Structure formats: C-alpha cells, structure tokens
Image (tube, rainbow, N blue to C red; front, side, top):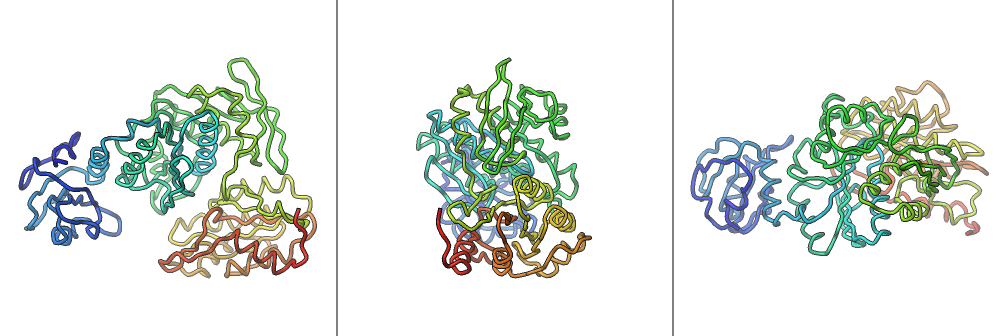
Length: 487
C-alpha cells in the first residue's frame, strides 16, 4: 500500500522522500519492524517511539511517521504529523481497508459493568440470529472463537486487525468495552459507534487521569462518537452526558423517571426478577445474575437491543440464562459444602460494595470476604476498600491482589489504614488466604473472593504468574473436604 493511501484522512508534512512509495506493513514497536515497513512514533508515558527511530531503520523501516523534529537518520521517507496516536489509528484503519465501517459497533463505557453488559449484548444478539464479535477484559471473541487479550481495549493497530478478521468471518455486530484509557489515548479514534452505553462512574484510574473531571471527560468521548446514546440516569454523570451530548438517547434507571425503568424488583441468590415498561406495555424479566447492579447492566443491554429492533421475547429468553465468567460467579454449585464461594472481579470501592451488599441479601450465616488491592494503581481507594470490606463483612481476610512492582505488605498497610473494626485478619499469600476462608466457613456462610474474577494470573515484579482462583479453590476443596458429596 502506498504511504499516501495509509495517511488518507490526515494532515501531514513530507520532510523527506515521497508519499507515493509502497509500504509492506505498519508498526509502532521498532522490534517488530522488517523490510519496507512504516514505523509510527508514539509518545508514551514510559518511553517515546522517537527514541527508537534508528533501531526501526536498522530493522528495515522504509518510512518514519513522527510528531517531533527528527535528527539525521538513514530513513528513506520521513513524514511529520500532529498526533502520532491519531495517525496510528487512521493508518491502521486504512491498512485494513476500514473494516469498522462494515460492522455495527456497540461501545460500553463506565467504571463498573462493562464486561457484564457486553456479554449480555453478545448473548442476546446471537439468540436473535446475528454473528457477534466481542472485545473486552476477559477475552476477545469472533463468534465462538476466543482470543486471549491483555487490555480491555487493544491498541488501534490490533483493534483494526480484529475488526478485519470479524468482517472477513461474517460478523454483523461487534460489542466492545471502551476503557477511559483507550478513549484518552485515541485507540478508538475515528470509529463511529451505532450505540454508546454509559453504565456508571465511580472512583478508579485516578493514578492515570489524576482528576475525576479528566476521567469523566475521557468517558464523554465515546458519546460524541456514537449515533445513539444510552445512559444510566440514576448516575449523576449520566445526566451530565445528556446535557453535553445532543444525540438521540434512551435513559434507563431504577430510581428516576426514564425511558426504561426496572420496577417490582425481587432479589434472590440465583438472580433477580423485575418488570420493565416499554411503549405503554409491561414485560417481565427474569435475570440469571444476582444484584441490583446487574439489573442496571441488563437495562443498558436491553435498551441497546431494543434500539437495534431485537424482539423483547428474545431478550427475555436470553437473560434467563446469561453467564459471565468471574462476575458474581458462584463456583461451588456442584459441591455439597453447606456454604458457597462467589468469585467477582470487584476491584474498586463501588464494585466491592456492590458484590458484598448483594451477597448479604441472601447470606443466612456469615459473610466472609477475601480481597486486596492492585499495585501501581490509585492508592487513595485502598483505605476506602478496607473500610467497606470490613463494614459489610462479618469476617474479612485482607490479602495480596496483583502487587505488580509494589511490595504487597505496603499495599495491605494502605488497606488496613482505613479500617476501624477488628473483624479482619491479614494473610499476604493469596492462596493461603483462600485456604483459611474455606477452613473457617460453616453451614450457610458465603465466601466472596473479590478482585480477580476471571483472571488466571498474578502480576508480581513485572511477571505474570499462573494463578487461577477457581482452579485453586477446587483443589483446596478436595484437600480440605475429602469426603465431599457432589450435587
């Protein structure tokens, strides 16, 4: 492909060479460059692609796309753009022949609920007969094919490659989690979403965004690039989105007047039942996931699917059996333990509060929680989570999560600094913490293990070590309860 075709849609200045030259492929990692490639310099937070131009040229780069002045280099072509990240997004879309335009893309953003909402959307749309791709935290999917991922929203080059594969395999809809990082860093720049769904906004990622206003403004970008806007009007930031973005919209709520509202709610350990009113008609929803917050997630998914003309009976049927790995997941259903263990990804104050309050509603005995906080992330939420965890549990076990480059004991100190009760113990080793929770559990108790959910690893000192909580808990059950009956 010619350089000028890759740069179509961008303003650029040719510093050296010609934009008529043919390029093999695009890269933003100099280590992946081969002969006749185009290297796009990205200014990152830890490193700057401009520092690797010579390495890229040495590896065969024919063209360099930069946003800074470049000193002498042997590159055949040097082109300057205003923003390297936007250039990467545009070039990636052009390189893969703009596959996003061939898909209907539904984006979901918010602090909590993104993963559950996109899984609900995927299940409903598939039940309606569509082939669906999914991009998100747990994994990426093209139909039933699962592709492992390390980011909620991939970098633009990988993202458009995924869109190309989806389009080539006949995918009709792509439902995707759209993180605040991806919006701020232009990973989804240039993509037009047919629906943008807002779940909620609570404290998270302030290590990156610095202020809550910055965090909100990053989220707002999705709705400026969506044809239709769907917002949780019970959240004050949902109201702000409607005030700042003049688009066709649907509002959903439990408390406030809205387009779609959940009423007559009945909670139980296996899920929730409620009514919704649409165009003067009332419908019953039987949801397979427990918790008030999952009703909000369902309302967002229902709203988008109604916008897409999906029949309500298809939506009703699907939500009865929807499943999301590591989200309110009772993993001990097949064991006769007398108590249950629930895994949940909750890693924010709001998320932890949601899952513990939900579990409390159906806990007949004691509520035991096991949780920690991730390293190299917002430290201000740690004492808040410590207080919430101990206030809402009968017994809390404070442990390690993904410490990354921080010392686990220092993270735990931050967590316990917010605790004013004595109903907790500290066990730094997460496997030992899980074992202790199982050992102390009695008839009718509930154990909530929060923070990792679907993850099958721990990040320690820059390495990802295998750590599958479901797998570990099953082995501990075999070890501790040797004569256990299976249901």
